[in-house]
Image 1 (cartoon, one colour):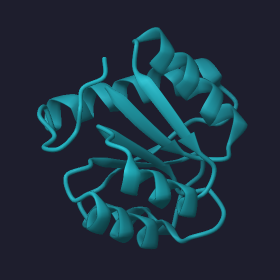
Image 2 (cartoon, rainbow, N blue to C red; image 1 turned 45 degrees about the vertical axis):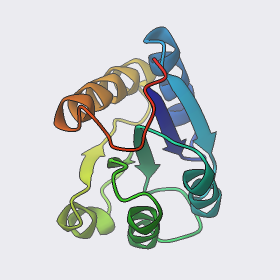
Image 3 (cartoon, rainbow, N blue to C red; image 1 turned 180 degrees about the vertical axis):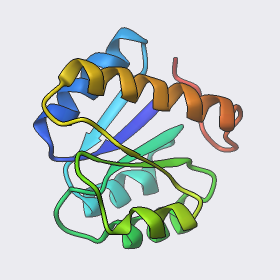
Image 4 (cartoon, one colour; image 1 turned 90 degrees about the horizontal axis):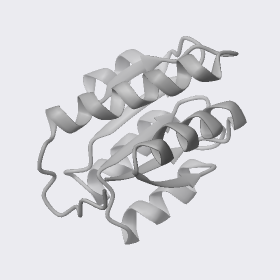
Length: 132
């Protein structure tokens, strides 16, 4: 399974790297929304985890652009603090989760759980390649 993570949060990137390497997933990390859009355009992924705390493009704009470029790509929006955009993102059909800050182990477990949940919600993503 190929997971994309859009975040510049060192703690989140570290937790995702540990969680997904242990489970044999391929992880691609991008630090901003523009970079994520460029990668989505040229690379198949099974899931995008979008950190709404990432500076740059607004979370809703990134979601809309990703849905245009890769309509079957499931997106999970995450944040380490409550987000104004969370409700609007949820209305776009995007799952949202608040991750605990300061507890890398808990964050790692939650990320693994999010991926497992999304795998059961979207068991066969058209156009994506299972790289697990």
